[in-house]
Length: 322
Image (tube, rainbow, N blue to C red; front, top):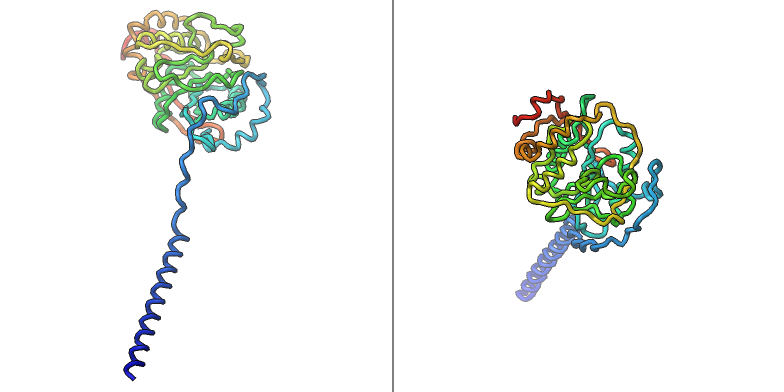
């Protein structure tokens, strides 16, 4: 009889143990089902030369290239793109100064997204628009735009791009040199595919944030068309750097023809300002900038920044540090 009681007790113990084990197995199985998936393995770095490059090709200034629809579908909100299958070597904010050039902007976006994706660049396109109908000030607008862009994300390279230029060759890499500012728009069809003069520094320029701060950005004093790019070139030398350029054979651009905008007429007074760069660049630039950010909007193909840069001052006020 005692033996039977011991046997029953052992069976109960085994039953309890079996139930506990089943409960443990169930809990472990449930935990496995509800646990977040493991993170994907890190992507390998993109190749130094992208295998997607096609080289020089004809530029269509009006209609979408065949690849645009597919490549625009890969763009995230605000004009953001990352290569899907490798870790980009270049992290670039493309900054486009803009006002009343919608046809040109559409052409640039249709061209630029496929171009940058073939280069396997991690990028976002920012369109920086000057508010109002007053005199255009490209330098002040870009100083403000760069400030807002760097508040938005920690970009390693700033690509300042005129709205009316389309690159012909995707081997002209949209990236920064670590040591010196890069002038990318070396050969424009308007100038017969050569530099109009040796210190020309307009169109498309790549600088790191550190380089931009080192030369105190653009001057804020150039109202209307002309000379702010020449002033920036002087600042490169005055801050101890030099301009580097890719080969002319690669750095070719088509310019979209247009009439000069109202509010952006040539300002002959800007030549006088250019003669004063050596004396003014320390106090006229990022460290004297005033502006108002009116809006920031993530659109599909770009991030739009609307900026009030203020009104054109009298010539006397423009010559003195504030």
